[in-house]
Amino acid sequence: MMLIDEPDVFLEKRQDSDIQRNSLVSVFLREVEYYQGILFLTSNRVGKFDDAIVSRIHVVIHYKGLDDEYREKIWNQFFDKLESERGTTMRIDRSAKRDVLENKRMVEMKWNGREIRNAFQTAVVLAEYRFLTEPRAEKEKGDIAVLEEEDFKQICDMTINFKEYLKGLNEGQDEEVRAFSEKARALDLA
Image (tube, rainbow, N blue to C red):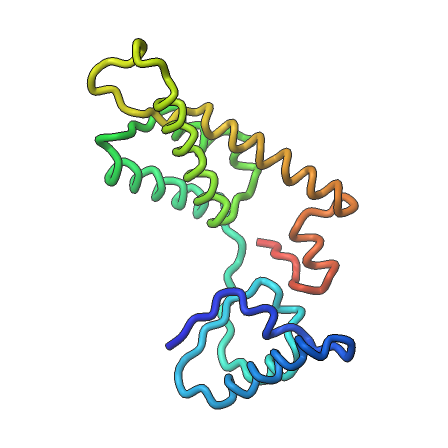
């Protein structure tokens, strides 16, 4: 059994003008043809697959976009994991958790799993940095870093600003609409 994560360079349609990439696709096709095990390929650009690849796919597993309930479960998993693994070195402020799960701006972001993980990890780093750079005179013995609402607000603001910047670069289209207009994948209407 083998997993190839985002093998898009091997899967995209061949073009007459790109002989080098066409060679990669041809070699990959030959290897797939003779592979004796189970091969998992992960991609979010299915619309760009070469027809020869499509004809070799036996089973397709489609993952729809996350709904709000599932996003909340993922956030909670990260909070629980942090508490169990780092409970002696970091505390989670109740308002931080509430803000992530209930704040309208956070909920409207429609984060995917990777974005949730990245946002959470970055918020943890911000909390650690704040604790480490806090003057010693303000710390008491036994103090630990605190993950606060402000950490997540900063991440949310930065993410919104970056996505708006990208949208501006791409004629007002977000990533999902761009992928659809480029025929890389269908719109996820979940």
